[in-house]
Image (cartoon, rainbow, N blue to C red; front, side, top):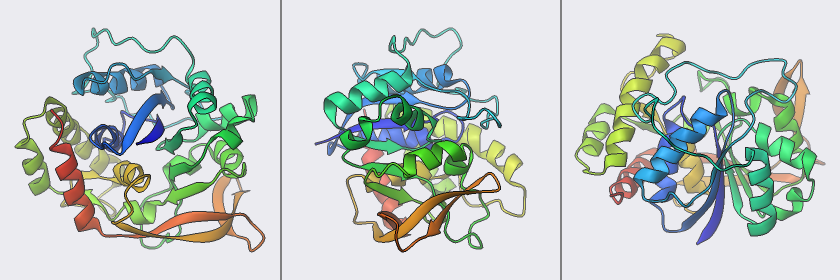
Length: 302
């Protein structure tokens, strides 16, 4: 089993919740801790705690991390629906009595987990600044982020661009890294027919995920606009694909590229640089096979 620490902005887009469920349904992975980032990180932590409770995994520590980008010059996306369909306002869901950055540092130094980051990289950037020893202690970092074919994808690279300075810190640190970029994850979606298949699964967690998809997708349509909206879908699987890449590569092809992180006009970019340290980038995905894999794994949840 691969020890894993999950850093997530769970609660806005439903794909973080699906990713956590996939992780819990995969015996290849041993989840050691969850840290949350962006906006009301405590509410995001409660969402993760509720899903862990449903899965019978309440022993896994969850800690709320940082709510604002590194330089506090912008704000993270917050839509107001976060927690709907998953967490009741009066529900008691205690988090670890430690800041998310400190849990991240302690877990990395003590357990040397594979770090999977499926939100902005602010927690990890602050951990690196606070305790540089985490750099050598992370055996591998898998990040949902990057955008290399901008013409093919009507979406921005939110995770890396919402806190560009944090992305620069993390991706300049020299940690062995795999990027799972938006132009690949955008190809992997659940359709209404697949939502119906998931509805047939008796798991309480899966039913909760289905509820969350039905809450999220109309909101996604509202913020996307008709020109870029994908009609026959109920969820993108950006973050679930990122979790899967940490242990199962049969759905993807990846290559090493020499890329340097860069800030241009306040925007984050990965630019070609022959002298840069190689970084692994996922380039292709068998979307149909991966969707079937996700449905099969979620079917294992009780």
